[in-house]
Image 1 (cartoon, helix red, strand yellow):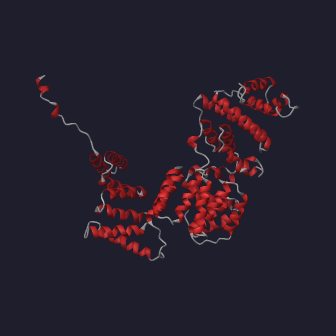
Image 2 (cartoon, one colour; image 1 turned 30 degrees about the vertical axis):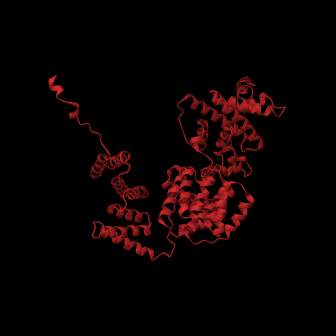
Image 3 (cartoon, rainbow, N blue to C red; image 1 turned 180 degrees about the vertical axis):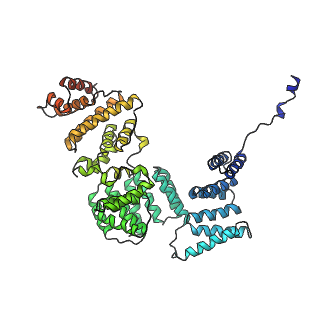
Length: 507
């Protein structure tokens, strides 16, 4: 007992790892080429010591070496804010700007390093950056190279919009305009962000402000065309497209923007002309470029070009398989059907009533405009959809899922009922839309009530009978029972079951 008592509490030193401990662990992990562990340690080091310039700098250099230049930029800028004029941070800022193609800033930081550390460790590399930037500047006219900070923050805002973070993107762009009020590209992106959160009028006003200052701004004109298209403003859209058809741009980004706008609005000849011209110049596009080129090529009879373009798209994003333009089920639908009415579909998926949204999401899968509508990030916010709505959207996207619970099993049978009704009423005319509006009201209430949808054929027959008998006196249960292949007694049974799910029946 006496021996134990010799170990006093003040003799015990507890070990609590701090930020510097994890920073050193990260360096050790890097030396062992355990890069995922190194990143975990750096993140933990910053959590424990967020104001440590050395950790920000080392972490930035680490991820710059693996090609994540945008993330490296953020970390190195933070290190520079915490400890200005640090020689190493200054050099690595020169290097990361060079990697991002921001040569003006790369040169500025390289020259700053040379002045801070004459004869320093990175002196040779700093001079190389300055020399390279000078060589590149000879190919650019005065004022042609925009400010690097603007380019970087615009790209950051663009990624935010792709992820659906429109409010954050707006904040970034608004802050940029405080310092760079006449950078029209920022105004254009800001207009798109406002449009995607439903502030269409404000978005238009921003673009008209741009055009008052720079009359021929192609991005502003094309963005207005997109707004008119989604707003189904046919008159203004037609006028804008006629104007765009007269423009003959030279720059790559203008040809791309013009071609994509023509493709979106269904003017495929003009779209193919501009998008194909870029490919002939050796342009290596992104996913959007190959998507629009494939559509434009296919709908103008250039099947081989369309297939080649879509093959490149799938190499970049395999999830797009199945959405090739030649696989569009809408080819078989008349243009005046409700499946092909974009404004009708948008109204349904944006409707405040869940049953209407369920109808819209189901019908979206029958339309050739599926990808077009999904490409608008403001129409569908998956996280805000109910479970049933998400499943209807998944069905429209041809996603397969295994029913793991009672709700999903019931939903599968409800979906079978939807398909049976659709087979009878496709392509949808006005009467067909009325039937489905009634059906989805029943369907929503039944799902909420945990109804099992045991017999989809009988439920479809009962729904059809309830709809038609409310409009036509001559409709009989027998005719509907035969149509769906069920007994009259079975149809009658399910009519009685479904009545409880009609609205207001309990009042």
